[in-house]
Length: 190
Figure 1 (cartoon, rainbow, N blue to C red):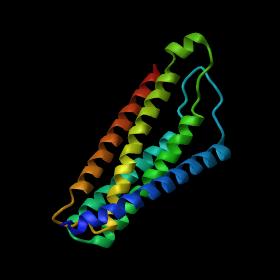
Figure 2: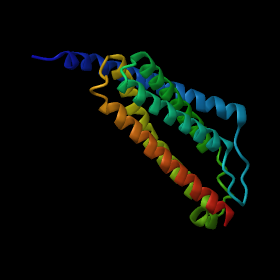
Figure 3: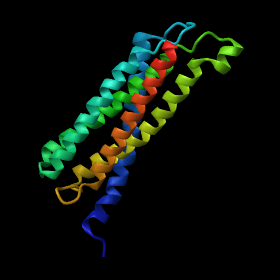
């Protein structure tokens, strides 16, 4: 016989699909709006990181803070605060992906020469940022699933593994992003 959670999971999968589509639409529309408002950087010899990378770093740190709040609240059985912290973390994630997507589009691609295309730092920066963004989309999906599950009463002080996993995933990607930024700054100084 199916337990309560098995029955909820079927409905949750449908909501996850629809929420993923809605989330993707908001992220893409936000990134396009940023592109229309702020435009693109002009090509230059030296790499110039877009301001969007700084803003997205702040959003990543904000999301980390909310994830830690969610972990704190779920362990103390403060469900309303827990769910609110998860929603704020999810909004931070969506804003991060939007701003980062705009940053990727707006980034200075460098002067177009055959040598620059193969050896220049611009392509390297673009590739690493795009790879990080793809991994962050997975983390954002995990966070969406955990948030929907939280609203379906999945987590409490006894069972919060999904929240811990989503939080750890988020923090690891935050550390990776800081390392990528360090490489960018180091490459730009040299």
